[in-house]
Length: 450
Image (cartoon, rainbow, N blue to C red; front, side):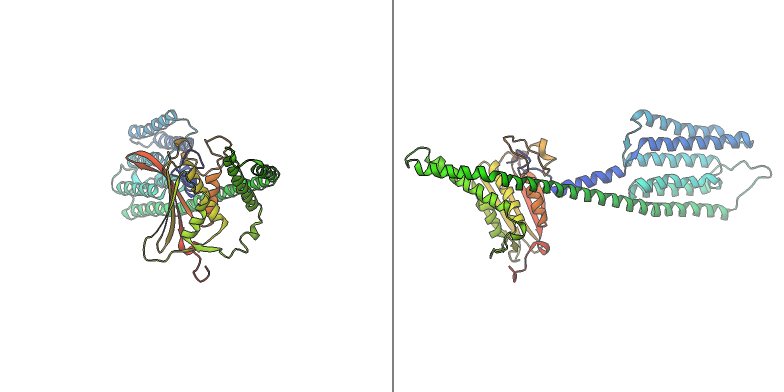
């Protein structure tokens, strides 16, 4: 059954495809260009070197210069390794970016430990890595880095080398050091909360834009398919009429005992079916079912109506009805979207099934479900990730690969959520299934109206 995009096998549905696209967009927004991290660190390295050299040689203060320069060299080595490890235009994931920012916090902590602790005015640079994390990384990563900053700042408040002030020296009072510690803590928490919320709002807007673009693209594709269908219905009218007339002439003039009489009868049935399909395509949407006295029905009856035209003698098509609790069977609209969408799914199951296709109808207080299964060969891996996209088919023979695309789009308009999967037994694919789920409060028609 699942040999092409039109088969119902697979593991992805149109909503899941859009969710995957959104997840990919979110993952990309939480990645950082490697070049950005490298250049920021180079700027920090230049600033650290300048401050150390100015204090050591410009002001003439004696610093533990060797240990301080070793910390700067460590940052240089990390930057060089990053540059040669991957292309500078590449991106790093969230975990790796958080690790680099954690290194920057610890490296800055070592320099401050050697140069006065929180009494060093450059202690406010602790806010840099936290700000970057709040902008591009997740809340959990930012929380870990913020905790690392608070732990490091707390340690530096008690343990550090003193700054080599000029005689008679300067000893900062404990109250002032406490104020500096509070400033670092408050600044870190404020940056984490404020910058994180602003960046999160920007990511949500970006995700919303992506979802809107995906929805618009899908509607445009369906609109294009609808235009092609209308054009095809118009163009096929004349040749179909000629075929129908020819078949009628053959059936009237051919003797009843002619061995080809059965084939002529099949042609007659199929030509009538094509005529009905083209007539239905050509109907104006606002006139569809306007005079139908059976515009609604029980879920099982509507599903049976959608499956009726696909019954054949070569393959068993079973419709099974089951209530999952004591709730009444839902009354649903007999809409063209429901009938055509579910009909396309069942048609594909019949085309790819070997001996049997089962359609299970079930419901409970909150949901209504239709599950279609076949015993075909399942969905091929090459098409699996793209199921639901238009014009994806590996069957050839003029198949356009529009069956599942149309079925998904029509069923989604009724409020359905669709899940595709291959049926497996002992690790071997034994068929394919599609599960269609509606929420009763949005899909069901009140019984007094049904």
